[in-house]
Length: 166
Image (cartoon, rainbow, N blue to C red):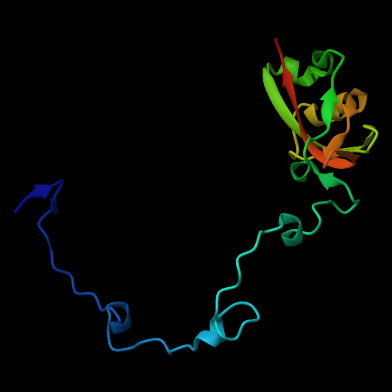
């Protein structure tokens, strides 16, 4: 008999009541006719014909509620043109707390001409005033428009704004 900390480590046979259906007993689920569970309109159970999947048909037309195409559905997303020093927007509360880097994601809506229509925080609540400063910085940025099929289109785009303290 092996003992460890006063516990018998040798195998003990335990009797446990296990229902027969869990160990392959006599019960079987009720048989189901194929036509009862086949998804789709075919009652014969035949597989649907192979065809190319159009992702816009699956998830709508790829736009938000305002008609802005999500940038991942386009050919080229809008690009931010930052011609100023982003460090001037680093929150003073974060400097005093010695936060070295923080990223905020902003959902921007850019029209066909590259104008910023709206900017909203997409990454959730951020400490030390990062959200407010990200919105201020994004409103100062200029944008090139997004493209789909070679044409300028209005797009919704997730823009990461990374604050770095040097």
